[in-house]
Amino acid sequence: MSISPSQNSAEFAWFSALCDDDFEQLGVAAPHLQSSFEHCAEIVRTARDQGFDNILLPSGYQLGIDALVFAGGVAAEVRGRMRLLTAVRCGELWPPQMARQLATLDQMLGGGLTINIISSDLPGAALESEPRYRRTAEVMSILRQLLNGQEVNHHGEFFDLELQPPRVSTVSGRCPDFYFGGHSEPARRVAAEHADVFLTWPDTEAAVAELVADMSARAAAFNRTLRFGFRTHVIVRETEAEAKAAARYLLAGLDEPAGAQIRQRSLDSNSAGVRRQAELREGSDDEGYIEPGLWTGIGRARSGAGAALVGDPEQIIAKLRSYQKLGVDCFILSGYPHIEECKLFGQYVLPAFRAS
Image 1: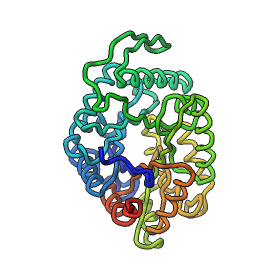
Image 2 (image 1 turned 180 degrees about the horizontal axis):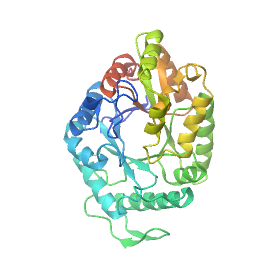
Image 3 (image 1 turned 120 degrees about the vertical axis):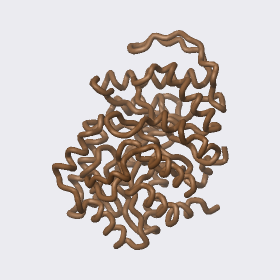
């Protein structure tokens, strides 16, 4: 497909708010922004029209709508123009059935599927971190074999399978890339052996450099090479003052109890990555900045990615290029409201990374 990033560029993905995560002000109900097929599809179309390479379709349970079903619904609108980074939660579906669904979806997208692997507790069933990541490793191994068109002979702790791959295959006949993240030791072990793109939530440049070095060494032990992705929010305006004012406005209607309640709604609210986002907030200055251009205020009302790049176009471009120099070549972005911020990023920032 023609939508792959060039060697001199980075992959830029946007985010469709399938999990009731779109606001004008955090913590203030906005019924017209609540997750629905129509609203989330409009976010997808906006990202497509702005020239993004990919868009993340997140997966939840208590919140929002189903990612796989939604992906099938919008596939025809993005086929050949933008990939879909579709989230799947390990354990929710039997791996052979999941492989068939993903291969079918890739066919519908003309080869434009990428897969965000999530290792989390399942609705109503908790599992300790170590066994949960062992289950995730088995799912990733089985999926990769089946989507590569290979016979599976797997006898593991969670799955015992001997079967041929499904007749339906991906367009390429190969498994789409697995995007996967996690800060815990079990997560890093799984990523080093099984992921293609290692994702991290917002962090300081020093911490990202340390993470890239650590994960590169871990992957090398398996004779593998990882790409690195950075999942962050963004607030870009014509001037720095306007961007910082937009950040303040985003929190103007939030009270701390409401923020804490929002953070606890996610199945991942107690993960190592979420704890790291809390550490960043605790170490930030009075305005919430942990370093120039990296604002942690969003984490006051959001589990998961809890910081934003904030600044004028030149500052945002410079910050992204700094992360590129550290080894990041994939940026998965979002902003509030998602459609408006997508357009602003497309206008002010994206063209700088598309110039030949």
